[in-house]
Length: 328
Image (cartoon, rainbow, N blue to C red; front, side, top):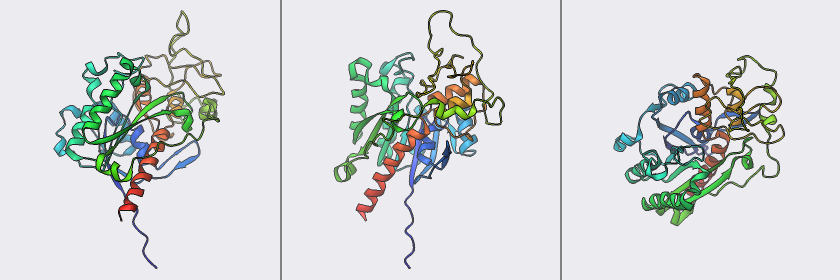
């Protein structure tokens, strides 16, 4: 009997890894809401972020030393591993509708260029970037086109996927742009990964589906479930963060800058807990957050939902596996 062929494993480098939502999606091997997400054929060889608390959260889950505190703008790219896949949710605050909107004029708004520096040095097969939907609206689309043009100039075919998270099973109203970049020589022969088809378009998962089992848990028997803000409602109007979630609908977006104003539970007279926010973002319950509520919610809100990331990663894996099969 012939020996089983060894499954391919694709080396990955992660920029702007944050607490690890995108990375967890690419790794797989986690359990969320009673469902197992199998390990995917990616090996994250190096992960970087300039926020030490994010790196602490990342390493608490993935293992000590898996990620490093590093400002990638000052990183010697020649010393970074040459990976087949580069991933990075480049900082979105300058593009977010609730951020400062500095756009490409700001230093943070140009951080996507660090991905290009890596692309020019190591020429990965695939690069996956992520950012907020507001990016496509800025300057009537000119900001998005500039980023696409710069990525293309590095020698890549660039598609931009607009993904509404509830379409892919995430119980939260959140739309993200995925930059799917394939090196030109590969694209000319094999094309590019296919944007996943929405599996939940007419059957969105609700906030109750995500956190209903936590209603009677008031201690830390489920990690971070006893942590929530006690801030009162705004005195005038229904300010951002003072919304009441609707029981039978996906939750409002978990924001990265809550300032103690995290939306209210759909039936309990309190704001959402740190764990409930993590659940809404599709982090598994064994992914814990050890800092203050403000820091933890910020890490959760900044992350790519692991379930959404997993859907993207599956498509990349299928593409690379098919390409490898055709090349043999």
